[in-house]
Image (cartoon, rainbow, N blue to C red; front, side, top):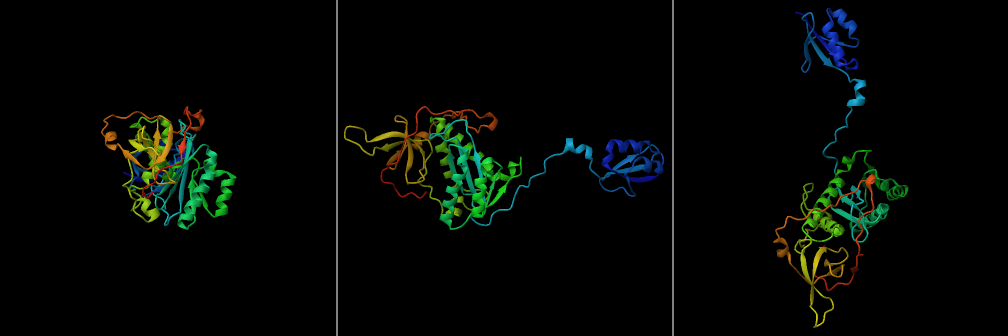
Length: 359
């Protein structure tokens, strides 16, 4: 029995090649009808063992790609799981804008922007009323971190959102010597650090708010508290907590409280005829001063105070399953007017004496 090994070029199609092989009687006819087929003497590993009409054994080996099949069968190139990490603080900053959200936060905020240091995974978050504020928030972030660390940002990685592609943003990056790393079109995976950070932040916000009776418009306070917490807990991508790698000091967790719990807060000005404290809700940690944010539902205002008694045990002992929080990012083609809270936010800047509390 004659043994013949043939490599099938996919330019003529696999079915066509098999048809030619079955109809061939002699080797000369086979070579003439299968234009572009290459001779092989031995059956190599991975070849297809066929038998033609005269009983000869034939090995068909694909040696090309069908040009005709590319339009219908072409797929995306695979993504590598790990990229090159920065070797020092501010070596690479990941950034992304999220929003508009389906519910407007207190203060009129609809968007937020994140900046995450690649080396330490320490993150900053800024609430925004408009997407166009991204450049101003970047300037604020850049000035703060460069002044604190005495280093310059080397590169900024972001998606191809219009806020990062503006001429003014590009000029600022060039003026500061910052390399802009834009993801290819349609490939948000290349900005995975920021995308995963945003997803984690929103998941935690929904979970935190589901166990409180606060309006959904408090997602801004919950978001800032979530970012504050993530910087102080272990992270699988770094050996220490982001806070320790960013500041060189281990984070102090003793002052942290359960978000959304009730607390009795001492009145700043009290008399003998009225109660000395009021029941409020803990909603966050102020960045500018040491203390806590509390929400007074009766007066609909948020204020800063230190003297307080938290009712965390009562809050944690509640066995409810939580409520469903509809908080999500609205797709651009589905943008509607966000829900606006009926009464405006009032924040009092005055506070009582503050205890020592490293933030």
